[in-house]
Image 1 (cartoon, one colour):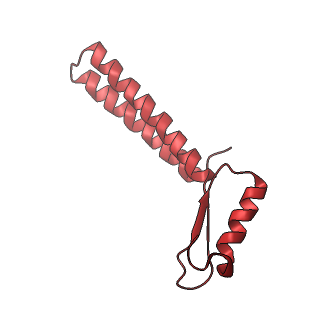
Image 2 (cartoon, helix red, strand yellow):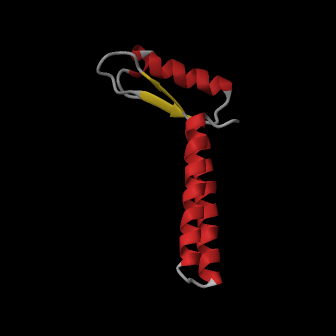
Length: 100
């Protein structure tokens, strides 16, 4: 799944910040071990950011169209028939009566 342009910018900014911080740590006279740890943390942060962006993109939210009803179905990674069931339950106010 391709990332949206805004997600790509977020990921690039995260990686660039990690690179800048790692360079500043190294230039400040830190040991090679400390610099390596900071670089690894920057890589982990970029990986976490990528995963968070992917999970956020895969999540779907459907709300009840009835004014004042706060029912919503939030789902991800469900089979198509389960998606239909969740969407139907969320949008049909008579089926959930305000609480799902």
